[in-house]
Image 1 (cartoon, rainbow, N blue to C red):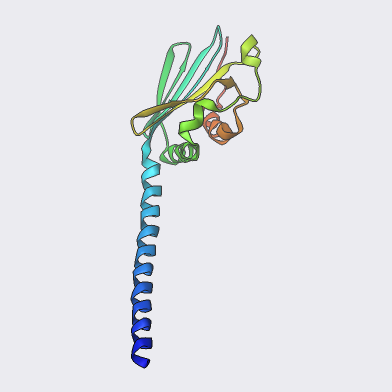
Image 2 (spheres, rainbow, N blue to C red; image 1 turned 90 degrees about the vertical axis):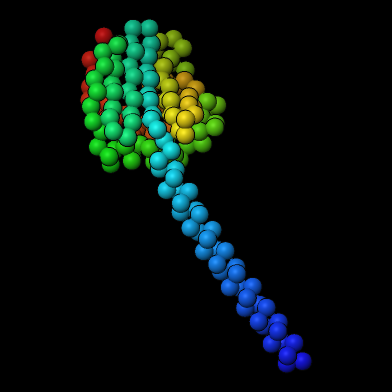
Length: 158
């Protein structure tokens, strides 16, 4: 009887060691997946337009290109700012971005610029449904706000 009890205890100990090792590996896999996510956003673009205005801002890990009616300006981007906007983009389910509903419709009658966010990740392009400038769907709100911080410098619109 003691021998049988000892055998069962040994089996349980081996089983627990195996589970502990597996759990440790799963935690490491989750950490590496999170690390990989940071690098999978290649660029983010905000396009805002109406009949007389065409604004575009493209963010990459190393630079920002801002364009107003075809006149482009390229500048460097601080790494901390890229990290901030790419982190916001990573929190979005990119496969559903084109289906997000705009809370307002002013863009239909030129009461607001029509805005679109385009995110390139792992070689795939994800384009949001259009929304009114300043009023993105709630799922895009944090990213939109972060993007507008850089383009917050007042642009002269015609």
